[in-house]
Amino acid sequence: MIDNNYVDLGKAPDGADVLFPQTGRISDLIQRVLYPQTQVTEADLFNRARQENATIQVFNGTEIVGLAGRMQEWLIGKGVTIASVGNATNHGGAPTVIKDYGNNRFTAQWLARMMGLPADRIQPGTDGLASSGVIVVVGSDGESIIAR
Image (cartoon, rainbow, N blue to C red; front, top):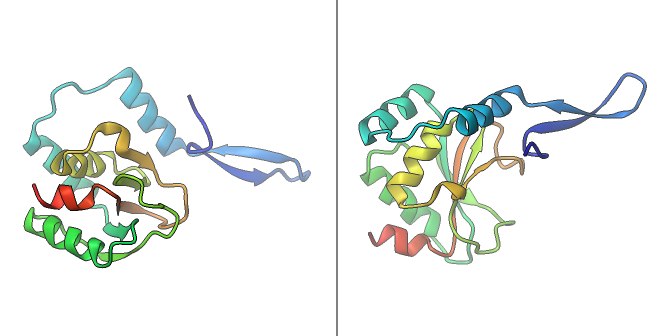
């Protein structure tokens, strides 16, 4: 289903409300649905993520002080370059998610696999936290991920 994660709201020249398709995200959706890749090796996933060259940020989505910094250290220990850390005030302590702000599906999949997260924890980034790249929003399960 194509929902508001795949379009931008806008105005036509006559002032009517219109939806503008985000062609990159729709293309990615078509690829994932119609031509899914079954067994992608860890090395292949890493190489594809590296080619995307996405900026990765870590945000704390809980009230646990310093959790984003601890996740950053854990990810750095796994070979991930983290651009910055911050807070996601609208996450409310929900489980950890990976938000893709662009067309960085391999980076998001690589991070999810590394963190032991299911594929449904990868979401399109539509909340305005970033304009591009990938953000890991550490949630209520963050400490258990780090403890692995």
